[in-house]
Length: 474
Ligand SMILES: [Zn+2]
Image (tube, protein in one colour):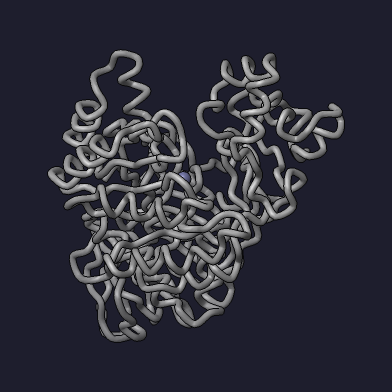
């Protein structure tokens, strides 16, 4: 398929002989005709009489599925994604991304030049920041964005300022979300020793709201056994969760610092005052990384420090690691770091195959011309999850999670192949799917995705994103 020239891209496509997964089940080998942006026909191989200008795509030996929906995007809103070719998403078959997760969402409502479809969430932390700056109160800010089209609210209870919210406020947020028919997407308060309590907290405040727990994992080797108990609570209530297939999260270094020390001013004050420093050291500041502070690698912040561990910084400054963390953060609160082997691989893999689990990336959208991803998840999470499922024998569960189940959760008119459905599609060579993004080369695209369509237009083929902007805010 040529993606050069809008004509070919907007012509009807006939995908011949691919094995069709319709979002819920296998349909066997079919011919699928795409016309006018829609799935026009799904028939036995050879039974479609194609229109004269059709572009035929040989699907023999390949799988045709609905375009993947990644419900864990980290862009704040659609405007941040405008004008970029989304090479990381399209190369993994992703055609729709839910953004604004983990409390950060500031919905824009619309944006031009989108290479993928975007679903926006309003962030609970963003609402708190807006309220602090005099822009209404938290509930009004969220309500206004839900009424303008945001499809839910994301919580980031591990982070300030949202984590100071009362249970009553969180219940009111859940009620608001339920009234608007949206989703409450949760980054839990504590993924360490408080893992089970944090799940119970969400089950207690959620009321009538549809809930999804993001990046389910128990952090710190001593807490890994808690994962089973947490999953059991969620299963009992039928609450879905997402996983991403890495043991090393990448987040704010400040996440390792307990309240009330997690602001630059309190850190500076504390460094001047020995009694406060003692309290700080005793307050549970610890890395949950398996290699201790040598396993906390700076990924974003002052240039000379990138790639260095906090342990190494401490040694070079002749400091204890705790005071090195405080010193680093008092200079730059936005330092981000990878916490090596915080989660356990075996536990993640058990969670991934559960029928309530959905693969999701925790990624940002990237353009081919400017790629500096700090973590391989941005280019590899979905492909790697597919590999896990393929090799683990649960590919149907992976496929339904990123198509019909994600669509149903967010009430999106996507996620199925049937006559009349919007033609967001991905043609895959399943045995050839390989996530190539690594720590050393986090911007390498995955292999195995042959062709991607959004509203019937070919937006990715031959390993290249088209410069089409067929996406919109859903
Ligand atoms: Zn998160």
